[in-house]
Image (cartoon, rainbow, N blue to C red; front, side):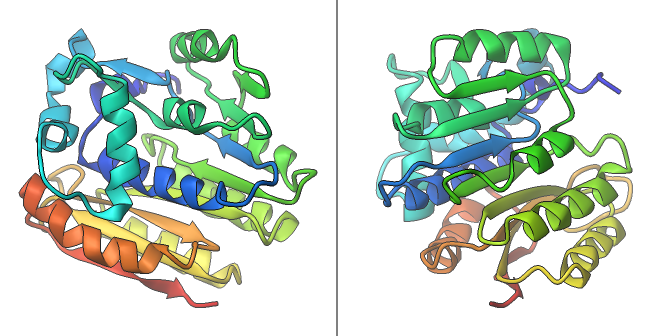
Length: 279
């Protein structure tokens, strides 16, 4: 199924949380000089035009990055690096484009790092391949990101970060993400993994969390931001991330940032910042 295009949703509240955590964790790992492998299992097009027909149709970015980009004042540590990268993509001031996870990774890449992007949609793959064409140490494959993740770990340098974020339009993705994470972790238990999930049916998320816990994976930190209270049939009411081998700096940063983010985005749902599985 290749109908999903992230351009309709780029920069929404779920992206803000996911990409802020991704940039924060990547920045933490880059404090060490050794080479790092960064894997993006569902990388999308890389950069999204917020004036496009797709973005204009939903307008989701207006209640996400649109509420933050024009703001002033102090920004919590969790979001500071991410917002700086978004603003760097919009040097003229007004918010015109949104950098997805692949563009963020490219912007943060050091010469010694290697990036592996996977995207099945032909148009998005082509756009991403063009964006990354002149970068050394970057691969862009039009293939299954779950299989790509397993093939890439463990990396030669034994240091890696993987972002696992399918669209979940295919219901089996809820099972696939848990299985892929567990298999990758068994192959590379010291790697850092960020698994993103949308809350559409809470029962599916409860099952996902139970599957991750039952797999025996340790040191899993959970961050969730609810845009609205859970409501069957409403659509996505919240989103969250599970961070395996979470940096020690993440819990305090998340606990500080969530209330600030909820206020700026005018969310009405629950917030979660806690260990799903301790070390």
